[in-house]
Image (tube, rainbow, N blue to C red; front, side, top):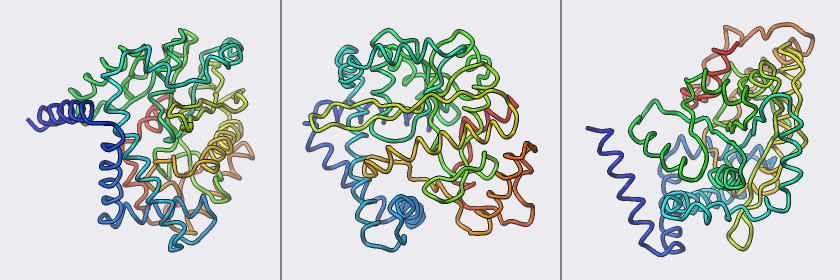
Amino acid sequence: MVERIGVLAYRATAWLLHVLPQRPAGFVVGLMAQGSYLVWPAKRRWSNNNFAHVLGLSPDDRRVRSLALRAYREYGRYLVELMRLPSLPPAEVGRLVGNLDEEDVEFRRIWEASPGGLILAAVHIGNNEAIAAGVASRGFPISVVADDTSFPELFELLRRQRAAWGFTLVPWRNLRAIFGVLRRREMLGLLIDWGYRSDGIPVRIFDAWTTLPAGPATLAAKTGSHILPVWIHRQPDGTFGVFWDVPIVVASSDPAELQRATQAMADAMAEPIRSAPHQWYSFKPLWPASAAEGADLERRALAMQAGLPDPGPARDLPRDEADEAATGEAVVEAAKAAL
């Protein structure tokens, strides 16, 4: 019953946001998103800590709070766009990514140069649905990993909508389908900034130790696929520009190689966040809360760089609240199963 109500509520909200003017609706939903930041202490603390790392300031600095509020307003605008997308013709959805036509040849060359498939490693910035729809509308075969555990009926509705735009949603526990995409030399979209998990691969982002999921590097090593860090920024005309970094080649599943490749992804993801932090809407904690855990991550990274297996978190460290916030993160669990 709860799931059915959730699906009906989603459909009703999507219909309402379709019939209402987009700009006023975005303004109202943006205010509601900002309200959630103000009244939800844990969410406010996590967001302030994230943006403090980006700006290199204290979480209590007013500039951090101002950026967080701006990001929540932008997130409200994104939600309205996302709910309105199913009512747009597929061709119009594809045109939201305007610059991909100019970069089509280079994008195709990068894909064809990968011995396996191409893993598109993205972060919660801009509008990732527009990336996938834009790529699919130009004839590229693309699938995106998504979580189907909480509301299977809603997942099925979203799967059908995304299929109309030309790309496939793959349940995160369906390892056969995930590996199948890459072994067919197709494209697989993965979001990598779901939140800090102590069992991820240690990396430095904005000069602080944290972890990223083991999934992308592990999948790349096992399938011969290259990793292409991609991101999308909102442009002044309302469309989105898709950009990418240098492809990352993962030569093997050796600990040092997995850590190197994951650090390369971390370096690549920092740049789009730094250049447009107000468009970044990953509101779960991305860094551990304690200096002791950060030091332990450095210890683990040095062990992996020396070619040793990841020794894992020290047992005497308290469980970080960020672990709780990111429970259920799809790619990490898929990577653990793949290992």
